[in-house]
Length: 311
Image (tube, rainbow, N blue to C red):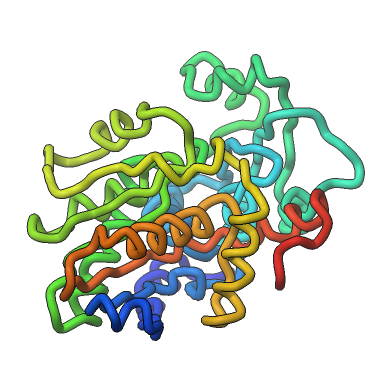
């Protein structure tokens, strides 16, 4: 069984790649990508960082089980299942919806990692934060360390905030912008907490509506003014997409040998390049993009829609 503390403290920083494009040179921009997708084959991206201190806390408390929530294609479900196998925790995934055989690639992977899948209807799933529902789950499964949907809590933001320290070590020049895709807000909140006030943090929401801004505010250690949430690149809402997005992702992979996912990083990168074309970034800007992983979802996407994303 892998030692949690040594695993997370001895891992080297994720690499930083610079994108080499004429459109960037012409506008006097430097664009870097923080490759958190390379942190671990299965516990990758922001999930690696969100789980870090949650797993250390669970082990320190002597917990034997992890219980969490997610949809049928959840990156968090897959990562939690893999972490349970890696570190010797039993894992339980409470899944929104009915069990459908054969399981999709995400859920099949989770079961192979040893996760017990408990399917609930949407009405029941909405109770996932209610103390009485969590109490009923403890009666059913016994004691567990609770991981919220998406893995976002204060322990998670502590982990994601460590990105800033790594970037400061990797980049000698000041960072003008940090760009990050946003679902539950946990990753961007950690980054905002630790960011320099002179660095603008841009979140690219994959959700319709402005409610995510309030959730991010609630996760911050103190109010900060150096961030904004962009809501123009969700492509119709969570998990929505069109052919233009898929073509952009495939072209990006061909040009840079970097895969993107259609839920988070693909939409963010599309938005960033749209802003570049619109001269949103001033000449001389140093822009850092956080690749939050999520690539496990490509298998399920291609299974549903016909191998549209190049792998």
